[in-house]
Amino acid sequence: MDKLIITIAPTGNVPTKELNINTPLTPKEIVEDLIECKELGASVAHIHVRDSLGKPSSERAIFKKIFDLMDEKGLDMIRQVSTGARGGKNTAEWRGQMLDLDIEMASLSTGSSNFPDSVNSNSPDLIEHLICKMNNNGIKPEVEVFDIAMIDNAKYYLKKNMLKSPIHFNLVMNVPGSISGTPKNLLHMIESLPEKSTFTVTGIGRSHIQMLTMAIAMGGHVRTGLEDVLILKDGAMACNKKLMIEILDIAKAIGREIASPAEARRILGMEL
Image (cartoon, one colour):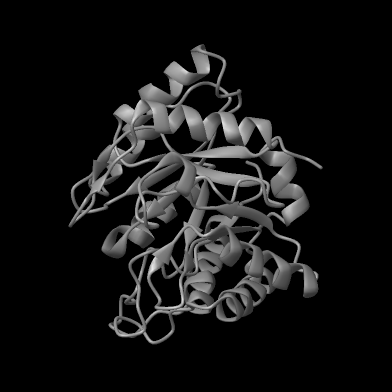
């Protein structure tokens, strides 16, 4: 098996200080958590930003503040930005405004699905706009899969030569309203991927440990962080450091070594 790529998703769109006091919201807080997680073995930083009121945003200037801080700290991680539907206005221009910054990867949902209280809306025009902008800026898409049809749609864009092989997928399991996080569902998702694909698995809430353990055992990669889990299995408040340690313990038990950022770039076919 390849070494294990760990993505840290420190913030997301949902967590607040009220839900979990450990949630990093400001650029400074986010970068401090990234530094701690990089030291533990995270090689990919999946970054969401918040505005001055703590609300989810896609503002280019806020992303730039985070990247400037990462540069100041000499923090070598794969920078992966979110272009998701909950970062404010749901237009292609708004959601992709940060794609001209110094980044290597960006999220790309290849279909629409449900969130608990909203629609994860991704029209064909919006998807194609984001793909083209990523391609023009040399950014590798991470295809976010909330339901099985999103894999088929990614294959459609592969046939159109818009997405390039090998595609990297993030299989997002157990978002309420989308595919549930069960071993059978995850196995079906993995078996449906195009040849040569790489994949990361995200398990939301209670599915987190089971889904990520399966991914590690099957040669895939994993995402963890407060975007995905707010409460630990013992009922304590999660934090990004503790979530990283959980994954490291599983990887050690299974016998997977941890990939450095340079090794992750090679595994994902994006060496500098």
